[in-house]
Amino acid sequence: MDRPPIEFIKASAPLPFSAAVRVGDVLYLSGQMGMRPDGTLVEGFDAQIRQLMDNISHTLEGVGLTMSSVFKATIMLGDMSRWSDFNAIYLEYFDPERLPSRSAFGAGGLAMGAVAEAECWAYAPN
Image 1 (cartoon, helix red, strand yellow):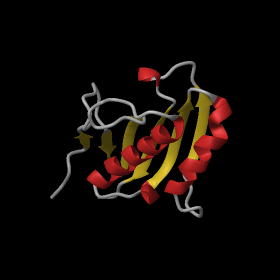
Image 2 (cartoon, one colour):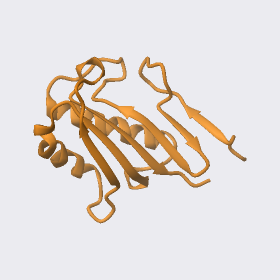
Image 3 (tube, rainbow, N blue to C red):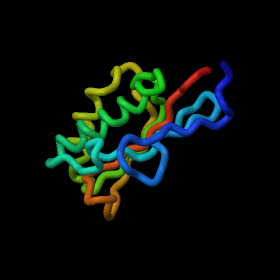
């Protein structure tokens, strides 16, 4: 069965945007934060980063993909002094031989006071 040219993947949390949108062979994941399915943030830096990465993984799994499908990531940190702390957790989620290209920058403020937000692009062949 053919997919529509643009496919919208619904977010599990009550948010005003799609969790991801597939256009052709690329899945564009919306920015993820360390948010539970009920829309509340988990407590603490490490816990938020793990939840953020788990949210990315769950979105990918929902369309039959894995973290190895991610080829680009953009990271926004509320505090750039935590860049190394973020990297330590981030690297647990990827094969060291298949790391996505990435940009990271400091943000003066993130929605809901989150410590980080990450958006990704993943290869999603038909």
